[in-house]
Length: 184
Image 1 (cartoon, rainbow, N blue to C red):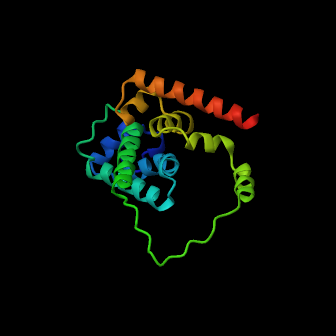
Image 2 (tube, rainbow, N blue to C red):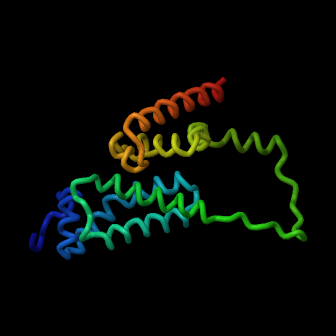
Image 3 (cartoon, rainbow, N blue to C red):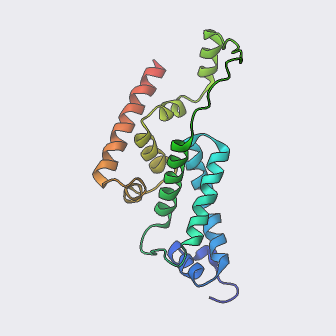
């Protein structure tokens, strides 16, 4: 793997082997290859830009730190999504609601009409997806947005293939019902 190696043509396992051998350009290629999808997943998962960016950055840092111990027989994509998901779950658990200041005056919220008008402007599919239980939403996003295979989703979520299939079936059924109710 000398000068001019076609990094973009290498698969993830070959890039990790190169990275473990000290070829840092391989790491850059892995980041470029997976960063956008991973960030999209993180943002969909937690809804907070800064938290998503932090989780993605920490995911790649962990990959780099573990470069010499990484098992190249597994799916790189599944590994990255699993690490990122776990980081986001840990961050959500650590987040504590801040107590309200007693002297704080709370302004009245928007009227019911304003709220309905705003909601009508939102993408109904996105709303329906966001309202799914966490595991169903995660499985749906990994499958349909990030296009992970069932086996990769199983690895990311730490579930059996049949459990992943069940989550996806229930998620699709719930989305279908909610979309039909919205259209009616």
